[in-house]
Every structure is written in C-alpha cells, then in structure tokens.
Image (tube, rainbow, N blue to C red; front, side):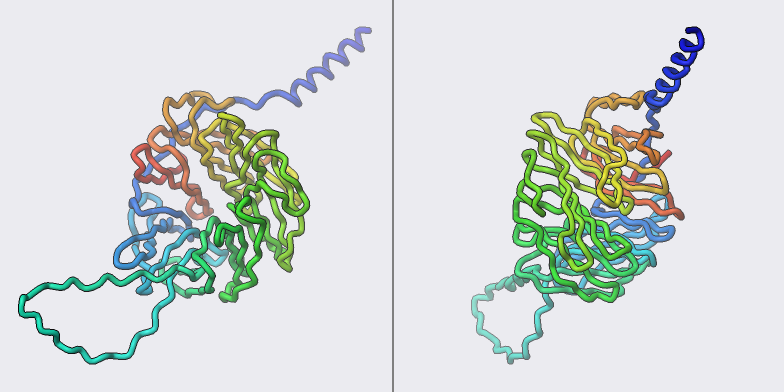
Length: 394
C-alpha cells in the first residue's frame, strides 16, 4: 500500500507539472520613435526601415521615407506619374525589393495643338482656369521599388472600377493581393516580371478577404470573414472567420471556418508562418484571437484576449509577436491595467506560451509590424491624438 501511495503521489506530481499554468510575465515599456505623419504602411528592407504614405495635391502621389534604426531619415522619394495613384498595401520580396499595390488613373493621351485666338476682354475680368477633373482610378497597379526607394517598374491592369486592396504577399516567383472589386472579394497574382494572372473571385459582398500568404508550392492561403456558404461550408455564426486554400490552377481547394454560436469572427492578419490574428465579437464582448495554424489549417495553439478588436501579428524565427489595442488587464501579464485604450505587444514561443509582454499607454492600436534579421522587430501605431509613432522592443 505504501508503494502504491508513493506511486500515486509521483503520478499526480507528474500530471500537475504537465498541466501547470505558464509563469506570468511582467510587462515592460515599449520604446517609441516619432515618425512622419503621412505614414500608412511599414516594411523593412536590409537595414532600412521604409514607411509608405499617400499625399494629396494636384494629383495624389505615393511617398516613401527611408529611416535608420533610430528613426533618422536617410532618404525620401515620391512616385508621381502625373496622374492619381495610391498605394494600399506594401511588402518586400526575398531580393529586398519593395512591392506596393493599389490603384491609379490612366495617363491621358496628349491632344493635338489648337491655335489660340485672343478673346477681347474690355472689362478686364479675370477668368480662373477650369480645374482638371481627376480620371477614374480604374487601374489595378503594382509598383516595384528598389531598397533605395527608386521606382523600378510599374505594372497595371484595367478594371471595371477602382480596386480596394486589403493585403499583399510576395515571394521569389511573384506577388499576390486580396481585396474587393465592386464590393466583391477577389484575388490577383502577377509574376515577378509583371505578368498578370486571371482574377479569382471569391463569394459575394457577404465575404471579405483580409490577408494572403503565397506558398512556395504555388498555392495561396487566404484569410478573412464570411456570412455565406463557401466551398460547401455553411455559415455557423453571425459571421465566420474563413481560411481558404487556392490551388496552383486558381481553384478553391479547401475552406475551413472558424466559428462560434451567435458570434462575429474575422481573420484580419497573417504572416508567412501561418500565425493569424483576428477578432471575436459576442454580444458586447470583443476579443482579439492569436492562432498558429499548420499548412492543413489545423490550429497548433490559440489565445484570446480582451481588446478593441484591432490587432496585428508577425513571426521572427520560433517567436510570434501579437500586438493589439488593449482595454483591460490580461491574464498572465503582471502590471498591465490600462485605464484607456493602449497598445500591448505579447510574444509567444513555438507552443503558444507567453514569453514576454511590452506595452505603452502613449500609443493605442497597431497599424503594421515588421521584422528583419538585420534590423530587428519594429511596429507602427496610432497615438491617442491620432498621430503616429514607431515602437520597438526595449
């Protein structure tokens, strides 16, 4: 009996160690760097941090600003073709090129010269020149930019209406985007030489595609939300998060729905390792979800935290970073009790265990995250006054 008791005690000890809750981590303060207020996107190429924004004037242009690790400006370049252009998504490829995707107007053909006749104006009335109407931005456009901010190439395809781009992904073979065209979700890919593939429509206005990852085998992984049947998979909640695999031929190979009864779910961000983030709204309760998936869209680990719903995710080696707009204490994070919306960054190991927490009440919600081995981790966020700031690990 004594041996049995000892054996049971050891067994229970082993079980308690196996299911023991992870140790809590103390929150550390993020380091902040002011940034130009036109920044909307963020990428890292080599040892240069590049912010991308859109400027407005006689015509809209794209502004790229190169910064070093301290936030000091190294260069600033403008993409201006003489017509309207706007960048809506940005990424880099393995060669360090920056790829932008968005919309632009067609360059109008020049008219033949017409002789000007002087009109008599005895009263000296000044007539203001008529403002030139902006052309419809019906060109789906990709800009390839060097790591120094110089425009290398522009690739366009005429569409029936301006395309809204939600996300972009690039690898050695090409670039792909997801977005909406006339309120309907679509996927568009081009080769690295700028050859456009066939547009792939997905669902109706009841669905939205928010993130995309190009896989090395030629398939695409696409993520978003849907309130309709897709790929034979029916709606389970108010809206479900969706994970879609697109084959090499452009067909829908599989659809997985992330659902909860009477909940509104959406995947809003993903990184190449298939770490995803999104929101779950059930009644008045809003949570941000961070989940790591396998290539078969099976979850390896997941964590939900109370939030305002805005979040971003990126992986660096075996570490995953999730940033979100936090409005309350978070279980397992010591010293975090925001009295107003504040940004919290959590790091996870390969098993989804929280290994670090970093926050600041001087910024509120993440806009973009970036990582490069030569540079490290950095993010772009809004402040309470709606200005912008870069943030990085202390």
